[in-house]
Length: 211
Image 1 (cartoon, rainbow, N blue to C red):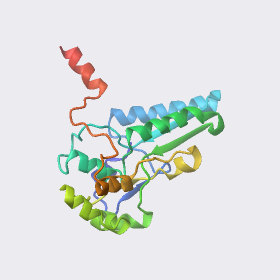
Image 2 (tube, rainbow, N blue to C red):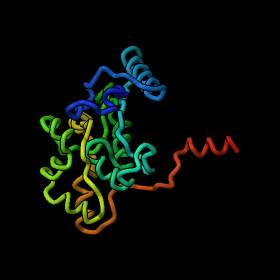
Image 3 (tube, rainbow, N blue to C red):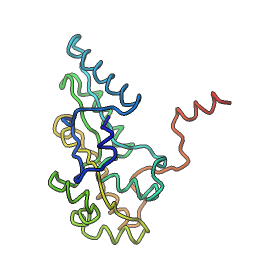
């Protein structure tokens, strides 16, 4: 539900996105319906007392990004764990908490993503030279990446901040960028799902209908 300007990432600094960010400016019917659904949930709580927790999730899909071919799928997913991704397993955990906690919380909205290592004051540097900021946070990251033929992000236009979900909902993603580096260092399997052949359920339905 971010604005087109934020999506275009043309500013001089990365945009820090949390639950207070706004105004929300949906760009398509997908965003419009999400925002409308949030409003209906809020109304149900305020007028009918129905507890409801809304999760604004970052990326977690296992398939390749259909808008980016460089860097590769695994490389891109690893990079995104810095600022706008979580694993499928962590997303499932967040949803379980969202089912359990409404009686205590009432109504609230949370961004769900892996914890970012960045700080708000990194915003300008992240836009100018994100790789240097990553290396500053994780010395040796560039060498581990190079050994696999990967590249660190050159620039980052937006950061999803899930800290409030940890403070209020009690959720913190178990897999973060540090886990990726540890897997690379130890030669272990990557800690996130990647399946370039994966088709989401709606795609399967479309093909069945077309046939």
